Length: 117
Image (tube, rainbow, N blue to C red; front, top):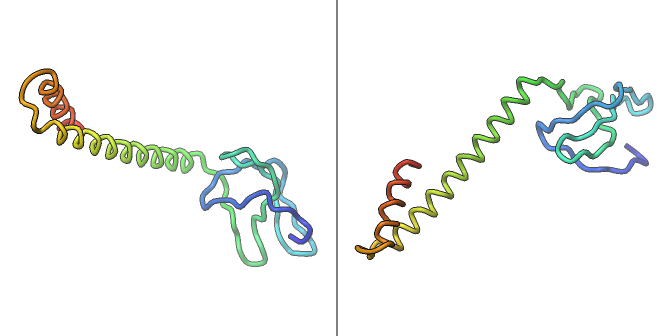
């Protein structure tokens, strides 16, 4: 919007909190709303629809929870993969060890590794 300052751009599917009722800008034929981002708390005006386009969809708590669960599951999967790589690396480093405490460590790591897979 002419004369306005961009606070930041929203990401696709980003959740925002509506702070005021949407208003139509008569000169530009845009529907705008004041909102706060959930991600970092920044406040600004968001264009929610233009002449023939809608940019934002209403908040649905079920969809928001599903999105959060999917994101968390993805993070857990990535963390598990990193942990598996780390354990595999340590097992490989201990391949030549056959006695003593490091051999016991190798056995324990092999047992953990099979549970992660």
